[in-house]
Image (cartoon, rainbow, N blue to C red; front, top):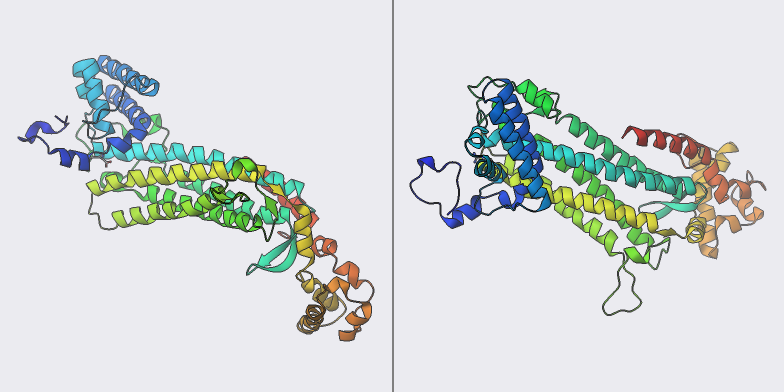
Length: 460
Ligand code: ARG
């Protein structure tokens, strides 16, 4: 026997398969806290407006708080016969406090209730994710501060390009995750309107004070169109977009760590606690965490595509299709939170092999641009300088050496503009030190960047 809020006009018992297909309690129980929080605000407003008595209000609030306590302590369990969290809470309340419990749903529909619960849940989760992002940014900042002089090759096309520092490379990810933090904040700001009091779709006939409930629940004000209120899931889609971007950033960084951790690169060594072994190959130490973070990105993108597709053909106002927003959103949130925690742990325990990074930056002609710039500083047009240094590179490839190993005569064989100071000009140290424009890897520029990163972190 299933318990229904809406049994009145039905003559037959619901088919069990229909119940199973239709129910959402198995997953929307996740926001029981927000559901109860919304109900407390609703009944507080009902009493203020004289729609329920003070006495009923107190009984209802006490009952709701008891339910919350008992759910949290595990004393009360979600029973399968209820359709969703809203039905469960209301039925349990009535079971516990009697008649007054039946007055809670006055001037409210599950349609505005679920819209509210979902919004409250998303806001809470955004706050939690913001904290996790901050922790990640702190770890990145620490790596930056400690590695202003750790040289490494910067890549384009995964080919060595120009020397940078580990601080600079890490700083690129700081920018990405900082943007993610701001994106979450601005999405949360757009979740500032409270849908409660919109009813099923057309408002209600009771003199509700929607401004008051909005205020009680920490919103700037109520939503402005009751049909939109119950059918808007834009904020969930925005959140899933932001989560997809976070997952994409985590995935890119994971990919780099997998490459850096490979036997060929050996730029980093993952901590044993964040690595896994093979059941057959005794020598293996695999970067499973980084691979899983990269792999889980697909799930998060999937959630975004799934909800966009669900929403695209839904006529106004509420339709049951929208119940499909929950499992995938919960999964995307939990997935990204898990990835943030594990990724942060992984990179904060990982060892950077600075010597390997530096040695790698020294070969691969990462200073070729600087050799061309040297000629430019001696009056040669850049395009010609590019061609001349190209000849030197070819010469080195033939001999299997680096530019730094060429003799001054060899340098001068392509241009008499080269002098003894070329060696200093193309040394790893000066290649980086000279790059001090805003955003570049040179120490001066990086010190400014780090100061800014610290200030920005405080604003998140
Ligand atoms: N479980 C439903 C959902 O998640 C709640 C709203 C139900 N409303 C309705 N009219 N059936 O969307």
